[in-house]
Length: 226
Image (cartoon, rainbow, N blue to C red; front, side, top):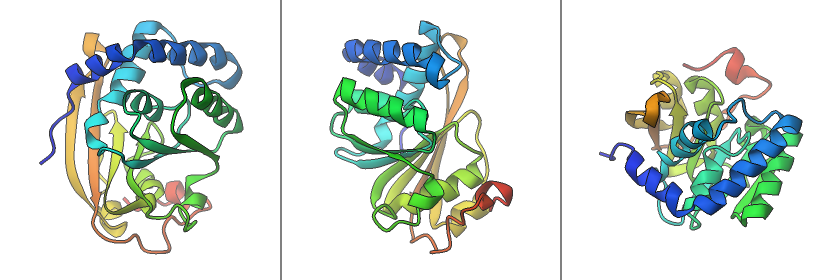
């Protein structure tokens, strides 16, 4: 059984790397007007809703993990995780060109171990260079759990982990089973200063994902497996 998120550890990791987080926040706010990256711009909100929430899942990434993030947006949770865990190697998947440009800028500014692919997850999930090649796949604020699982689980190797950052726990038992995984745990936690209740849902890959998934052409959202 895995341990629940430890926000005290998350805060300590943030404070130990505060200079890099300040550079990230400065770039985020500066680029937000051009790229529409986030509605959260006040420092306290960025700290709790973006940085600490991202770091809540840090303990689920094994040492030296090869990780992939689906729907990276402005880089949450991947960039905070790479700031505090330079052992992690991330592939970031984002379909919007302006957001990909921002991610490349942050990669260079902070010296992150990341590759950015401006592509759709349902396309890369069929590509054998990426399919079932990763120890961990994570995503935050991308889609309901059923479609999200279909985007993410094809990337995860057998024995690897899918980490879904959610507001509240969601059910997608049929999707999880069809895609070759089982639920490992679900952990609710409260962000500090009343900034909201969050949930991390963990799924272990126990079998190969059938070749027909992800289906593509919008089927993941239009006719979800859950």
